[in-house]
Length: 266
Image (cartoon, rainbow, N blue to C red; front, side, top):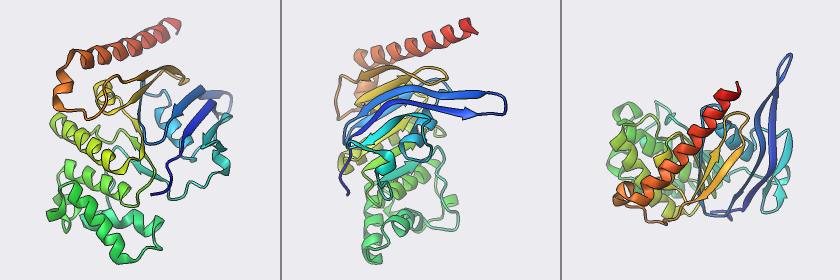
């Protein structure tokens, strides 16, 4: 794996121009993401969470402010092969098996590695996610949770130092979602990549993360950065503990208070 960078944003602002107006998606966003950390971003719908991921990955360019990777501007940083991205839906290629889908990123980002080594690496991740016996199955033959595990394997197989996840478990039922959260933490302990995780679920953010970034309604600003006071491993017993529910309630009140203030102002 390539060296895991320290990511820093300073006063990021992103505006979209329309015919007769300018819309601010992000405003004065400053965050600090240490190497190998697990950061979650929560906030109301439309507050710019996904937009922030796109700025951090270099897909969108900020109107003002800057993003730094180990002190170098994002414009001067080669991010090719350094970021794995997982979406809300698995987006597997329907004609490829589970193994074929897991291989896809290595075919693009690690094609200089011999095929047998890339296949071995993809199989290693399928094994880590308990999918070895399903490697020859097509996506339609897999459950939703299995498909999302294949998408995790696809993102991790080329060993990116940064993993960006945009509501990857939102479409899953509650039991499968909780199982996938525990699976993700187990895989993160193996990879030690930096994870930047967008979610609408407050409890999911608290369970997974070392730090939670709470954003305001649009234009998205950082309302609070919360260091989660209990470290890994996060077992099932944590979800029902008073310290867990208290932190979830604190963030919920933050978000509800911000939404109420927005409605009053409008």
